[in-house]
Length: 140
Image 1 (cartoon, rainbow, N blue to C red):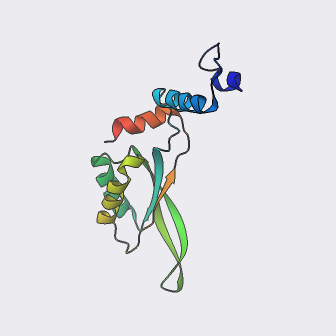
Image 2: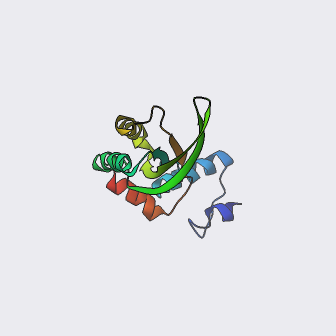
Image 3: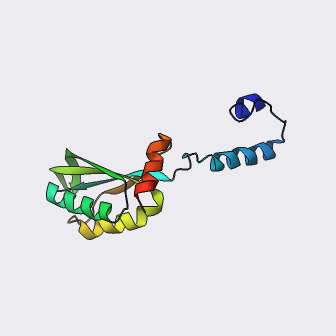
């Protein structure tokens, strides 16, 4: 196990007690800048039209709360006030650092027309380290 766990660090492996090896492993991950700490996410929201989507996107990007926002048209099916509804909407996929979520949510709410907008944070478990680093570079 020692060779498997530490083979990428060194050709030699010094046997450590379990607690010591866990501490060392997590220390190396932190020093190495590993992006597996769930510090990044995709926030989903929907808008009734492109005009509102663009207003929200502009507010988010100008405040550097996200690095990238993708949009695409969707057809949403849902229940609202005991009625089955079907609406065309614009979905936003917002790539951000989790540290910005509270401010991001406030910005979406301040610019959204829905009474109860969809605002869902999905953790990024892992990703291309240069892309995740870029998220940090271009956002606050």
